[in-house]
Image 1 (spheres, helix red, strand yellow):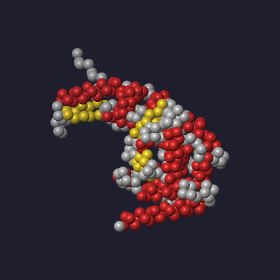
Image 2: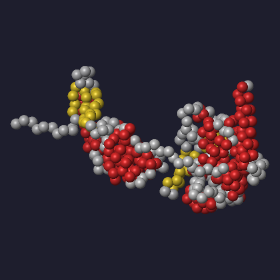
Image 3: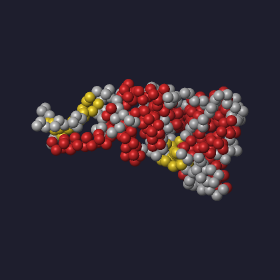
Image 4: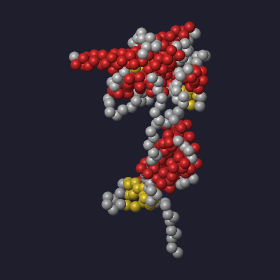
Length: 406
């Protein structure tokens, strides 16, 4: 009686004639759904057998796309990624991947199916930014599938499986007149310093709310940016900034120094510490929650700015406003990049160490001119203010070049 035929798809071990190595081989499918093979070579046959056993067991565990992604979230993403990032991963997978391709076998998930997934999401009204985030999450997860020998290559990397490029809409910003009006509106606000820092230094909301008193050197007019207050589902966590370009020293414009001195005196009057802890707090000394800040302050201030009909200014747009203000006074692109903490592969600014570049100091003085910290009246002609600020910045840049030549 002939021996029973071995089922297909289990793989095999054989010795390669060209070099004598033992190869563990298991069938798979490429990004286009065509049959291919995953191979691993070893000097000893026993090692190849063990490798084949491992590949079989992992493939059995992988099962469907849903089963693999659930395991990836638990075993890989949860222990490794930031806790603020994890909810976004879960949402992308559970809302935008599993309902569409969750029942597909992982080995059968090819570029064609991923392209179809992206088209279906768009047809269902999912926005392009969300589609791009979903694709990025799936691509990251499938890299693990490749590492685990569950699939030979990552189908999400195929050109046909990539989402369209996203051109973010241009955000509104404040001109000089409205920026000065904003500072006038919040002059008596308990959290006036939050606005002053946002519009004159361009810090993100979490970076402002995460500021600690020991991050500040008011005598030297220096801020050491080291933290970000992260908020997820109402829960806050003070997180250290990871990237070097994010952790930076910035000069404090005079308008910010004045606001921080006022904030320090207010804190002292209420018996709050001013040598450590949060610079900006709620009325009971706790952290400032974004939703409470929006309801209690920002929405009211924004309504008084007299913005054109249909223009919705987000708090983060104050950061963009700084970039425009600096541009209006002639601050160069690299100075703006350093101020805002943006990445750039074309510069070596991140190697400057703990020194504060003179160009940043000059730009800070220029912002003081624009926002009225250097004696110009609040109702001064905006065009004249810009010209004076630009002249000061140019004088500072000229002095910097002279120093470099000596």
